[in-house]
Structures are given as C-alpha cells and as structure tokens.
Length: 99
Image 1 (spheres, rainbow, N blue to C red):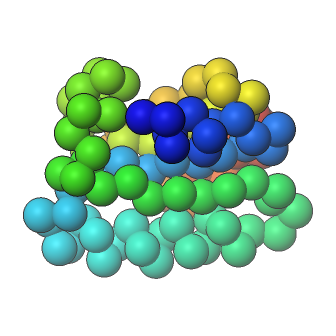
Image 2 (cartoon, rainbow, N blue to C red; image 1 turned 180 degrees about the vertical axis):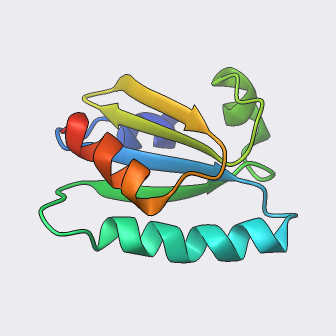
C-alpha cells in the first residue's frame, strides 16, 4: 500500500483503473480505452491500470465492489469514482473537471 500512496501524491490528476485480469474481454477493451484517454489533447494526467486480482488488499481497503472501477486522485485526495464500462469521452471529461 505504500506504493499506492506514492501513486496518488501527484499534483496532477491520476486516473486509476481497477480491472479484472481474469476477464480477457474486459482487459482488451480497457487497454484501448485507457490509451485513448492518456493520448487526449490538453490532458495533463497519469493513467494507471491496477489488476484487482493481484491487489486484493488494496481493493478491499478502497471498498471496491464492481469492476472496472475508475478513480481520480490528486494530492492524495479521492476526487471522483465511478464503476462500469465508461466511454473514453466520459473519462476524459472527469479528468478535466478534476484537474
């Protein structure tokens, strides 16, 4: 969890995506979606995928019940959270609102 703390210390927004690595269809869809979010123009943020299966203690600590689960942190504060199959545009908009 110490590593998680260093991830969310950023002064720019950090979009975290918790996903189910045992669901290949979900993994493939998220990979492309997150690349598009990271490449969005004028979006100064970090985009990080986190495998929920490999990080069970973190998932439990954050009370994540549904995957995929997206969170935006800035300066160690949770600013936004949403679960489900969100569109690229929705994710970009959420990051922009929390910049």
